[in-house]
Image (tube, rainbow, N blue to C red; front, top):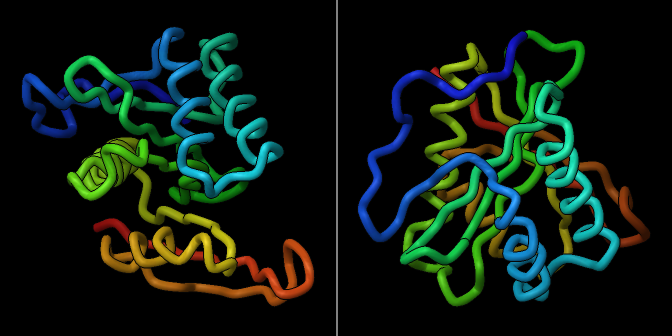
Length: 173
């Protein structure tokens, strides 16, 4: 499967807020917004930035696609998706995050819609998102449900005792 951007825009944009492919200057802003959320551990942030670096440093790679949302010139959110190996049309939503000062303004929904449309343009049929059962991820779980995802699986004590892996999925038609 060749990962390329669709030929037509996948989301209407406004002058003030738009979504575009990851640019090198986005890296530091993505790092900062992940820290500002107060949700992610340093290890999780390190993993997210490793994927950003992979996209920036290996333009021919086929595993990850990252888009940034800019509002009034500032990176306010981003997402990272990629095809799930050994599947036919399943994609992982590895990361979707919005700067705390921009939350509640529809940016997460815009990013999610953009990701779904991009997956569809790549003949994807299922988008999977994994998260934690910890209380600090409650808003994340609500976000997925509010955007049409269903809880498909839960593995008890996955991350550590008392911290389950919760798998959400959305079939795209």
